[in-house]
Image (cartoon, rainbow, N blue to C red; front, side, top):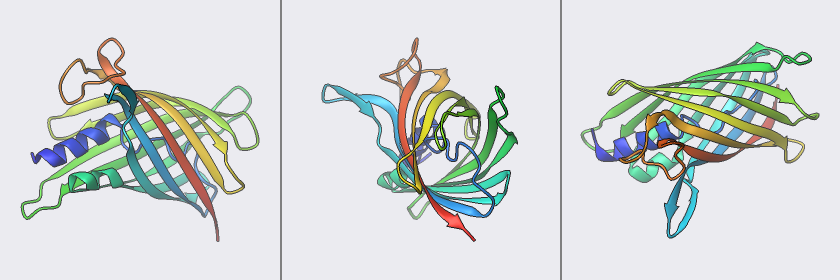
Length: 217
């Protein structure tokens, strides 16, 4: 496999697909939003520890009251001279009612390819499920798990997460999230070695995302 493609895909796997879980809940019917996500696993450099600045930008659209389509471009992959993008959809499985949280599931596929005369490609499948509660008119707290399958080598990555969504303005929401990335993998050494490993497994990731609502027709 091309080294640059491998490093780009490895970063995406460690980041578990698309950064923060966007949208945490589905959008309203026939409304749309622009999304962006920045962050990743914490790494040491120059004596300090900070999150990898892995950047995605995307678009989401409410197809029905219970299904939202979404797509993202992996901008950081371009630094490795690769093209990376994903497409998928989120579905509301259960609406919040009293002590029962809202349950949202998202399925997506990720594709990477190299920019050279002899291109190589890599496909990943990704799924997430989250449970969210409203703590205000537009604020949410949520928790869930992410599951990523790398077909090359048949590797599976598991990541639990915890986050909060809150308004920044009348049309913009922000998300802060922490994940235990690749929690089922040993990361004591090698390309997935983590500064934030828990018992030498996985790595802690920190993320910030924004969702700008564009309205609907």
